[in-house]
Image 1 (tube, rainbow, N blue to C red):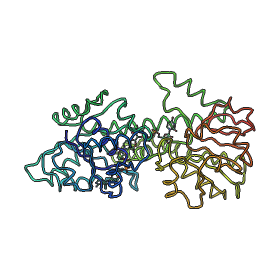
Image 2 (image 1 turned 60 degrees about the vertical axis):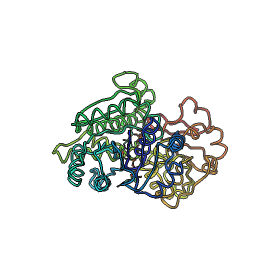
Image 3 (image 1 turned 90 degrees about the vertical axis):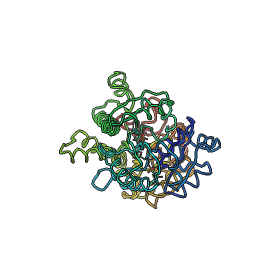
Image 4 (image 1 turned 135 degrees about the vertical axis):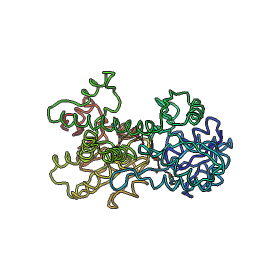
Length: 435
Ligand SMILES: NC(=O)C1=CN([C@@H]2O[C@H](COP(=O)(O)OP(=O)(O)OC[C@H]3O[C@@H](n4cnc5c(N)ncnc54)[C@H](O)[C@@H]3O)[C@@H](O)[C@H]2O)C=CC1
Ligand SMILES: O=C(O)[C@H]1O[C@H](OP(=O)(O)OP(=O)(O)OC[C@H]2O[C@@H](n3ccc(=O)[nH]c3=O)[C@H](O)[C@@H]2O)[C@H](O)[C@@H](O)[C@@H]1O
């Protein structure tokens, strides 16, 4: 099938690349000329395992193209995916500016009937709005249909998730659109959930909101474990063995970040307000996460009282391992707070340092290895559980640091492995280990 994808961020790019891998002819459109020029050369603008190989293979096979030109990109396409960003607006609601702009360009340049498929996460009712907006600007002889196909990939495992996800959701109020999407998606060989337009939009928000709430729940339990002398690792595994609870998303830590959970939870709270319904559970989940992001600095201050002039090594900056994405990364809030307390911050991240330098405070010094970051440090904070950080040998902390005190915001290590190592260790929801 001939497919266009509008927007080449995480979702647009992965969607375009994976649909071309399945044998479709795909053109990706973006307004960012630098991005398109990189992509045309087979270079991925994002760090995502396996993506660049697939990108290059499919460009080579001639079934994947990139353009900034809507007319060229939409030419002869039967399916058009919209995958532009829907960031958080000032009042917490989803900002539909990019969706509006994409719809306007689409309507100006579409010359044939097509099915428009929304991949972007959009509030319930937006697909109906998109349909009306585009159709009202099209010549009368062109007809469009609309469908929602929300995306569930995780950054860091985006390609894997696309081919091995738990389900594909397609929603439409038009039978023909549903059938076409079912046919295209059948090639992924995954369970397909077919539903109406509004329910598909809601499934996406409800899924992210549920996962975010699960994280805030376990983080609250972790904070209580600390006060009551229990170990949240044991609590998580004991809870997770119950199939009704499930063991995933029970790793306590310094809270969720990233480009979606923070904005999507706020967007659904805002949708609740508009519908005159108070989403009290979700509001609490968001509040717990706000507090959790900086809990590690509270631990530092409790231990040291004054960190002015102290060298603090920050290990890991990305919001999670496997990505260079810094959006809403806890490292933003943690480094700001450390600097406000007068600390001298030396940071290391295996892939996110370039992006970090664009948004973190200018005073941060960047190291090119864990060793360099911790050399002569008075304490080290782990904020992202990269394998390289998890595999760094214990002895080396003692060897390099002025003071081997480690604050682990991701519970990377088992307590029984640390005892006796000579490193003082503080983590989340578990007893501290004296050095
Ligand atoms: N990042 C993720 O892991 C996931 C994101 N989503 C949702 O997917 C949507 C996209 O997210 P990301 O890929 O992270 O966004 P992004 O912000 O990384 O990329 C959006 C892309 O759209 C382009 N763009 C903006 N306006 C355009 C226009 N008028 N025409 C053509 N291109 C335009 C931008 O230049 C950019 O390359 C959002 O609604 C997000 O909530 C859903 C699941 C996973
Ligand atoms: O809508 C989206 O954008 C995506 O949001 C999340 O994916 P992502 O944000 O890429 O990453 P996750 O693996 O879900 O992690 C989110 C945050 O939760 C944190 N987390 C995750 C799991 C856990 O057990 N503990 C924990 O603190 C991570 O460190 C990270 O900051 C969802 O998992 C995807 O299904 C969804 O498509």
